Image 1 (spheres, one colour):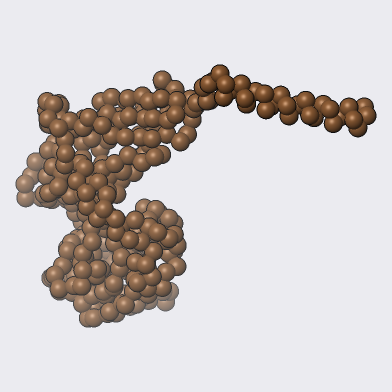
Image 2 (spheres, rainbow, N blue to C red; image 1 turned 180 degrees about the vertical axis):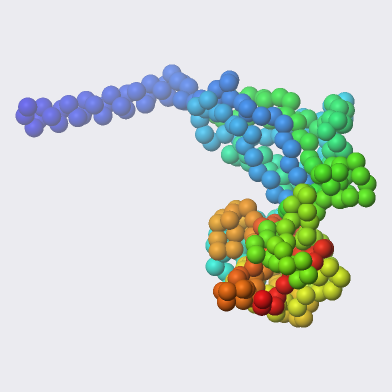
Length: 363
């Protein structure tokens, strides 16, 4: 084919494009629109978040090949008897990351410089279709569910979701949100999930004088008087844990302490193998004869990222000590707990020995 013929073909091709474009304008042909499937939906429309912590869920969103971007909007929030729901949409300040948290930050100030407070509704839906209940929610702002048996329609919050793109809109009806009472820390098996009061002993649920406890992991912890390995389970609770607020801190302190069976604090120096400086992402350590205290940023852990201080869900406190046992070998004992704390404040994690004290002396 000659060069002239090739040029003529190209001219004709581009001329056709111009002609089609002109026709679109002349005949006012509609622009191509996005696709919005009538089958777009969520597989689960019941949300059961826990107040006081940031909870994110997509509830099994199936877009059925609908075109992104889409806009998601919560509409028609109401109680089962038709009353409007407004408490979910109160605005409060929430921490929002402006830079990536890595776990390598060297100070509390460096962590705080990577996030800022923004006013957000307590409950909202994102552009991704994810629902989010922010940690600024609490029992005073949003009344939690009372009990499983009380999920009557008039006591349940319902809402619809409007989904829109350039192809149109669809309304997904009758979502439910049933928030649980705050659990400001984990593990929280020592607290009733519905009332926040003391949880009963799982072995004696009808005995009001027996309660459940947070139980640590124990390895090679020998009793001073019994000379046996101490345990902590549903049947025997030689050692338990309390996660509780304390007074007199600076608003972002975390204390670690151990208490013997007489209620006397054990000197942290007894736990001679504990890695106090690298155990937590914490700063400004203070060690006394009764506890070790840090400055920390809440929540703990700060994000779902795995770091040297977190598995993505929990941080870990691990008290260790070693002693010589019969035969001249050195045995290392460990008392550990994987935990989370969701509410800002001054908190302490207390390991309480109930039946016997740990044996620190060599055999």
